[in-house]
Image (cartoon, rainbow, N blue to C red; front, side, top):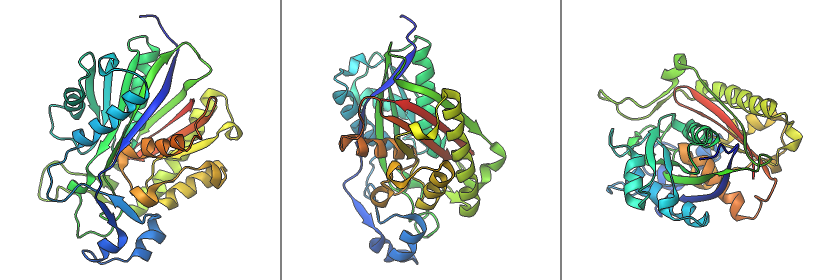
Amino acid sequence: MANLQSARIISVGTYVPENVVTNKDLEKIVNTTDEWIFTRSGIRERHIVPMDSQVSASELGAKAAIIAIERAGLKPVEIDGIICATFTPDSFFPSTACRIQAIIGCSNAFAFDVSAACAGFVYALTVADGLIKAGRNKNVLVIGTEVISKVLDWTDRSTCVLFGDGAGAVVLQASEDTKRGILSTHLTSDGTLGDILKLPAWGEKRTMQMKGNDVFKHAVRMMSEAAYTVLGDAGYGLDRVDYLIPHQANIRIIQAVAELLKLPKDKVVTNLEHFGNTSSASIPLALDEVWGKGLIKNDTMALFTALGGGITAGSVLCVF
């Protein structure tokens, strides 16, 4: 395969469960109010799989992936790689990516998962970008998919009100047009901060645990630093950015990051009001929203930035 120098996002697909849980619904099961949730998070409602269902991350991810492949004008057999970001996998192994491969029939693709929590999509996109630029792959499917409702303590109002289930996928394709595609990526981690946001695999409390104030402080700093790094590496200023598409963690985090980046509100994409924090699915869900409105055009520059448990953080700068 020729060594092609650019990797372009050519399509996006998303899927969320039909079941919607509003803040008013949560008032009935936990000590909270719609006003308390919205003023602190910017969230009004979220989609979750039915509590008594066996719906898995691979099922949601497969539905988003099928849409992305169809929008790319490709057949499943033309996909030569699948990288899935999730912290709510169907099983320790086989990977969620392998399960999705089996569902959608991408028989010519490798498949593996990455684990970087809410920064997972940025991590997966960075890996796919590197493989394409190395000339190893042509069409890589990058997926973020989560069923977070399965790992929440529904009596803990500090966490259960924030999250939703969903999936998003993009097709990253090799291109000789070096003026478009992924221009720069940056990943960073700090394992010393692991305890501020975690989901234990063993023990009595196997539900998400979060120290919200610490997460806020480090999220704002690390998401902003990563964004400035990719811009500097690519040789662009913030005035060239058309849209900041951040991980949809919390409206206060997003606003603080935008303020540090000196970006006006109309350049900041948010949709967490209706989806909540969907972790690795949140960036493709937000991208799909602006793409669907016809706002993603040739030469549109988008800046992705995210923070997740680990602590992990990263940014991707791309031109469509």
